[in-house]
Image (cartoon, rainbow, N blue to C red; front, side, top):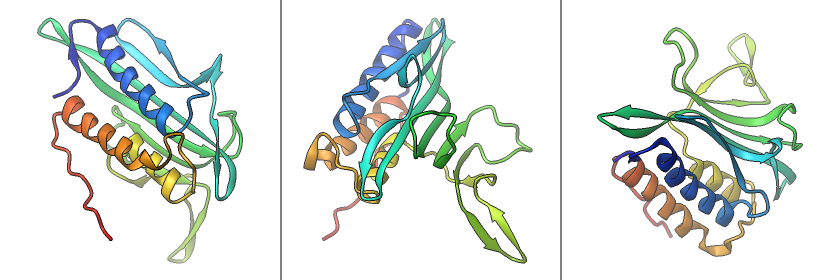
Length: 196
């Protein structure tokens, strides 16, 4: 079931409490998630007066990671249902969001149907395709919905980031994914099978 509460602020508190706990356990506790609220909208992400990407040490050296989400509490029958309007997850070399991302995952709910994929990834790379070269930084590779837990899993498994929670990270991500799907969306969570 989606987050449904009596007020937009209560919807925001449920979501940000969940997100802050996840990020503190798996990415960083030094850079808390900040908020920019209005009456029925909320933007969350790493902030220090302005949005920033936080440092993460990886097997490829120090990179910077940004997560941002724009949410809206929509009134329905006297209560409010929280919806995601946009998300941005970025991996880049520096902290400023003016810097070009190396990889970014994005979603925009209101994307026009004659435009690019609403859920997409972009990479700072070129791909030889046919008789030409496709700039993957300008192309919008369709991805389907990308959860923050999957991006954090990528940082840990593929890039070698060591999470603050140590070896507990698979359990932390699984619990967070389960809460996201079953408590926030109403979908059933399907855990990945354990493989030797």
